[in-house]
Image (cartoon, rainbow, N blue to C red; front, side, top):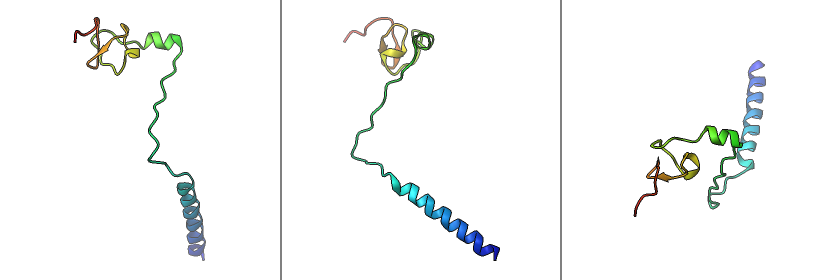
Length: 78
């Protein structure tokens, strides 16, 4: 008897889980939008990286110059 109750509970959980998965499909056509980080001025100044540290963009470096994924002191000559 308890086997039937266990099977019934598992079936209900499975149906609820499938309903959650199919409820909100992800569109592959929409481009991924990256939201810029928002920091307070205090954390922005504390988190700035020194010259020579790795970086992804200018906002991470103390000099505001990110060249070849490194915080730079001067603008690269091209």
